Image 1 (cartoon, rainbow, N blue to C red):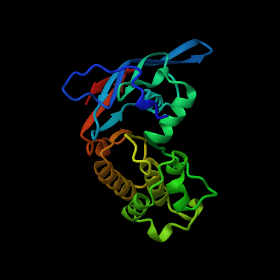
Image 2 (image 1 turned 90 degrees about the horizontal axis):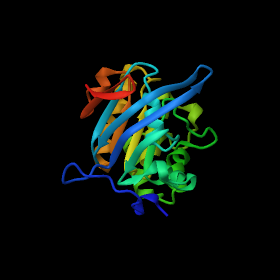
Image 3 (image 1 turned 180 degrees about the horizontal axis):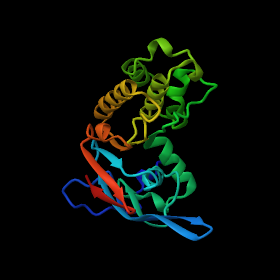
Length: 238
């Protein structure tokens, strides 16, 4: 069962339209030999369907930590992460895994493609796991990402920009409610990074999903609708 179909905890609405994502007083620390190291100190965040947000901050500020918590890849110490009103922090591991398959797409800096699968198989991988494979949508994605001629190749036969386009397509193949990206152009040159970002934003607009991106680049961040910065473990609008 899709965990979002069970409204275990409804987020309060501060406007007529409730946000897709609401993060409330989120805290996270990591154990060190010197004791707990606080990374997130009460983060509050709202993101609506179709909205794009760039998350900035210095190295070690907790940007990736926040992204992993929102993506149900880790758990916080305190606070709430509500996706369509469901607090994902309270879900079982099985329900969190289903959420990652069906409702959340993640694009990693290191691409994380499956080396033994072709481009076409990598694109379909998450959608097949979620039982949401749509051949028509896959064909459109493949064409939009300029991957038609590369469908039978393996990741090692692709450039970095081509691999990142496959990673974006794989994340969007399930038509997620929320797309997360952690430095998605960090391993690419400026031209390739700009091309990947333009394609990603076009496809985000087409699918209507919300987009949360971690980036060090103020230039790329400016292409998204909103920018916020992590400072001392809390968010500040840029």
